[in-house]
Amino acid sequence: MNAKLILFDIDDTLLYTSKNAYKKHCLICEKCWVPLTDYDLYFSYYWKKSITEMASILIPEISSDLYMKYYKEAWEVVPYDAIYDNIKTIFNSLNDKWYLIGILTNWNEEKTTKKLDFLWIKDDCSLIFHWDNMQYKKPSPKVFEGVKGKFNEIIFIGDSLEDYYSARDAGICFYAMLTWFTKFDDFINAWLNSKFIYKDVISLLDNL
Image (cartoon, rainbow, N blue to C red; front, top):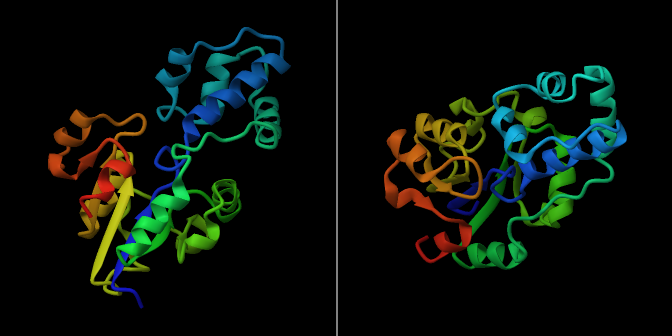
């Protein structure tokens, strides 16, 4: 087996998943004939509340059950936004450096597959870890049980503190991407060395 492994988080590391959630929410607003929720207001609750809790706050005119029905329907019509338009080139560059590429996400298999198919990278990933085959979720360090001790080098790339905490507590090298919510100072305040914080994956490539 290849001695070097890079695992990627998906949400807001490879896909702008949070922005996609906002688009779905706005589609529901239109469907229910209510004013669109302000962008900043939506994200003031995002990650802090569950989807149903956000629905009851932002669109109290409809029930949470109806909101979730519309939300699931929106999955089929609202496209994702890829963070990188050259993800295949990025992966090829990593392969040239003898890295095996994998995915580590908290999503279930169905949603993980949908996201990987959108990016056209499922066949490029040698290992895919998700809720259905791990039974653990980040920030638990147990998410790395399937790879620890099997590679000479393991790197995890993510955008959130929960990504960082899971890797840190498992003794896995972590690189933070500043591609969405978590800011430079957030990682610094969590005691991540600045040399492991990058604007995006492209800026990291030359330092691997």
